[in-house]
Length: 90
Image (tube, rainbow, N blue to C red; front, side, top):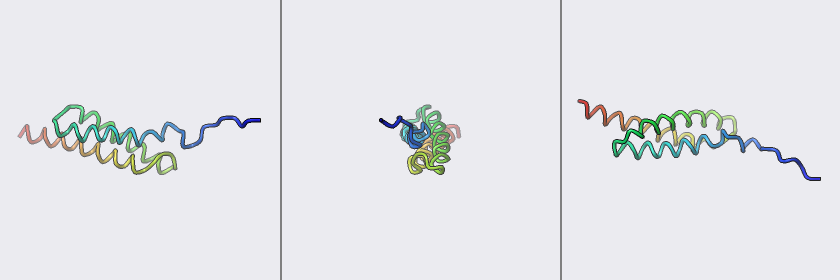
């Protein structure tokens, strides 16, 4: 008889937080160079999802490097657009 299909711990939706943060981080970093408002939205999402992804990666679900890189790129995007806005308003 076949074993029942059971989801593994790595099949948790939390495993997708790191790669999702990485995608949003890349969008934020690239959008900050072309002065796009999407940089703030994507950067905020990247930082939030990346922090959650790092939390779950410490518990063994998902990968730490994707969550960390997504968080860093999201921060670069948010700070880049903030620097452009600050320079433009001064």
